Amino acid sequence: MFRSLSLVLFSLFTLFSHASALELRDPLTQGALVRAKVQPGSQVTLNGTPVRLDEAGNLVFGFGRDAPLNQLVAVIAPSGEVTEFPLTLTKRSYLIQRIEGIARRIMEPKPEDVARARQDSVQVKQARATDSDRTDWQQNFIWPLTGPITGVYGSQRVYNGVPKRPHFGVDVAAPTGTRVVAPADGVITLAVPDMFYSGGTLIIDHGYGVSSSFLHLSRLLVQPGDEVRQGQEVAEVGATGRVTGPHLDWRLNWFGQRLDPQLLVPKMVEKP
Image (tube, rainbow, N blue to C red; front, side):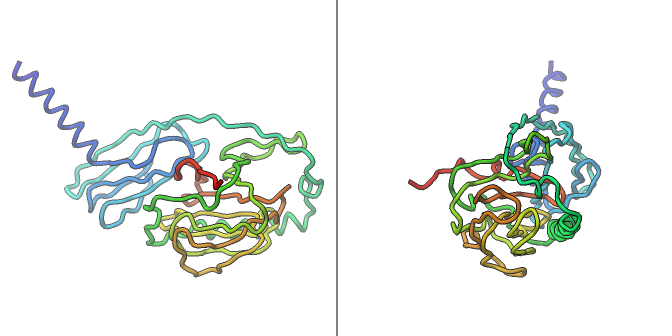
């Protein structure tokens, strides 16, 4: 009996020590940004790829819209001990949105428009590839504005009956000129007033590969290199680019992984 009790206690201790080795702050689901903590001085990999840590052992990673449900985090303690944590993501289902009346130029862009869009894409990818030492991603994010949510992350859009790629942001409808604020501290890495598809476009680097993108803006109030604080006004809502009406399209990235901003913020409370 003593042997059995010892095994039980040993198992509980092992589970406890494993659980304390990787503290998860956010839910494990497709589309999630996950903030976590390990023992300072450790090394961490996600599916074999190194993930950077700050001095306190904080780290961040993300899972795309259709990420495999089985993931593996490995933690190498300062002692050299390796602990593996199999993670199981929650599978999500996504809405199908049908939008009619899209102009032919949008559905069938001219060669010069395609070339311009490709140049825009290069700029955006470069900004989202930023791997700065900022740790603003540790903040509790806030909504950049309030209003009716007219588009959600992951939804499949069908334009004029033709299925297109999924939507990777959350759309908040608001009149043109409505002020947009920074959801967390950061630094501006891209500010372009008129991209082909996204119109006025702003990207805020929150550090460690985490960034917020604002699309279809009518006015930019900041420029690249500006540091911004959470709640600071950075732009105004518009209907620029290829859209059907004024709204903010807010996107969240961990490097090239497109994530769901709504998972980071509380339920929106609209102003009366």
